[in-house]
Length: 70
Image (cartoon, rainbow, N blue to C red):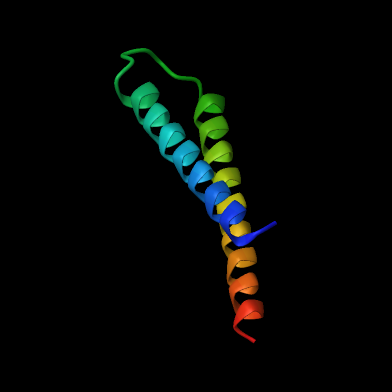
């Protein structure tokens, strides 16, 4: 992956993370209905997965920048 592709992928994942967190907040606080525990776990798992992907891509980006700086 090129540096620019990684940056775009990070931004796309950050956008997905923001949307997921907003949706989680809405569902858990604004719906007025009982939400099953597994729904909370599903949101938490999705958020964690997106965060891991973002961190992985950030590490790739740093490695690429270090390699380019040599």
